Image 1 (cartoon, protein in one colour):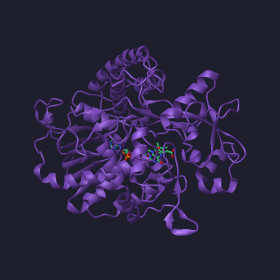
Image 2: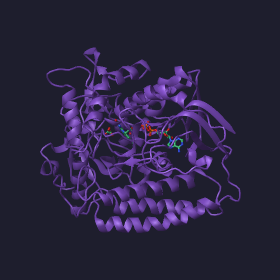
Image 3: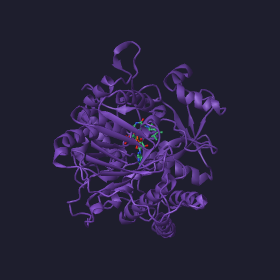
Image 4: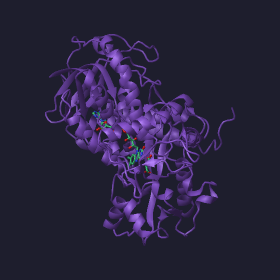
Amino acid sequence: MRITTDYLVIGSGLAGLSFALKVAETGTVTIISKTKLDETNTSYAQGGIAAVLETSSSDNFQKHIDDTLVAGAGICDKAAVEKVIEYAPLAIKDLVSWGTQFDKNEDNQDTFDLHREGGHSNHRILHHKDNTGFEVQRALCEKVRSHKNITIYENFFAVDLITQHHLGNLVKRHQGDIKCYGVYALNLENHKVVTILAKATMLATGGSGQLFLTTTNPVVATGDGFAMVYRAKGIVDNMEFVQFHPTALYNPSESPNFLITEAMRGFGAILRNKNNEAFMTRYDERGNLAPRDIVSRAIDNEMKKNGDDHVYLDCRHLDAEALKEHFPHIYEKCLSIGIDITKDMIPVTPAAHYFCGGVKVDLEGRTSIKYLYAAGETTCTGLHGGNRLASNSLLEAIAYADFASKVAIKEKDENEWQHAIPDWNDEGTSHPEEMILITQSLKEVRQILSNYVGIVRSEVRLKRAFNRLWTIYSETEELYQQTKLSRKLCELRNLIQVGYLVIKAAKARKESVGAHYMADYPNKKNK
Ligand code: FAD
Ligand code: SIN
């Protein structure tokens, strides 16, 4: 099967769907999503979206910019930070016009209720209760489903980007002349590989939390976009900066881990260790509202020092009714496992949450591969530097989808459908006889990354991780050559590649900065 389309969108979170809506009046749009349209990281976002809507004495763009730069540990791209933060009011306007309902103040229905999260000097997080992402995803799914120019394929798994390489031409990284012509995608319902030819391709495949055993990310987050771009000889950057969220619910029988939003600490909740000690002020003067990298490391240290597998988040001193009103989803979830957050402390642990790095894009969302654009968590825009400020991710996703839509609309007609691209050839391959080989390797990869490439790293741990991963890489490549494609095999292969990129970048950065902490180099390099 072959599909031709003006715009191809890979991924159906906020980045992909908002891009689709922006370009849909100018051509045909095909969205592919590897499972259901609404199974995305976006759907699970809790806290909200950071935006300064009105300049006042207490808050303005500059304060949001400064908070972002401080959280990013000095390695953000200032131009990207300014561009995104100044775009925020337009982003909110779009989301509202597409049907997203943000909570309003009870006493003034013309103003939004604003939460505060770690690293923010002000209340500036728009939200829908404590499940903002679900509301955003709901609104966007309705919009794209009813658009006449948009065709949606669920259960379509993007396997590899199509470039000149598939016409038999040599392509080289850093050479700047690679062009994207679309993607090979596996239809998970009939197991056939479809060739999708596109004039402009938007990569919006999200992050890779599944590289770790403890993660807030749903199972779709396997870093497919990072791996596809790297295989196509595109450029990725800042892959060492994997952000761990400080407070995922500690519930060993559950995976992925349920998130306890940072907005709860913004609301006054306090972290305590098992000795009931409110430890955060010992680590940072901002206490419970320090940026995430600092809070996660502090918790990790408390757990290791005391031999514990979690710490607690204490909300017992807060107004019970207000707590239930603002965080109904968390209240119900905790109650379902016997924890009444108005009376009991919540057991929490850090969990892999967000990839600050990714596919390198310019200020307009162009990747290093021509006619391939990217937005959202799969990118490295420079906004987050070494550590993302809370609730800046949804903002970045919608902002870069907009920036990229503008250039894609202009550039798409320079590119032609390459009908000479051959169909996928899987001659000589067979179905895997032992799925256990794939599932076991997947477990091992996640164990390696969790044990050696987590919150605290060291030269010796990274070396061990690299060596262990190499063995699994070699075995998996051999299997890949002999076997028909399956989602599990492709995801394993992608996770191994992402793991390699994280380790390689971590080995190269001989300092501790942001979310990358090396026990051998506890300080930031003096420049
Ligand atoms: P996603 O929403 O993850 O969408 C990726 C899409 O790509 C999915 O549809 C997936 O199926 C598809 N895909 C992936 N690989 C393939 C493939 N090979 N083929 C086809 N399709 C593919 N950020 C905030 O700013 N505020 C918050 O409050 C917040 N809370 C969060 C809470 C949780 C629990 C989590 C996990 C994250 C949270 N984040 C938050 C981060 C934020 O949700 C994500 O970074 C953001 O939603 C990413 O959007 P995206 O469109 O880039 O990717
Ligand atoms: C949260 O609600 O704590 C998550 C916010 C984010 O990841 O930005």
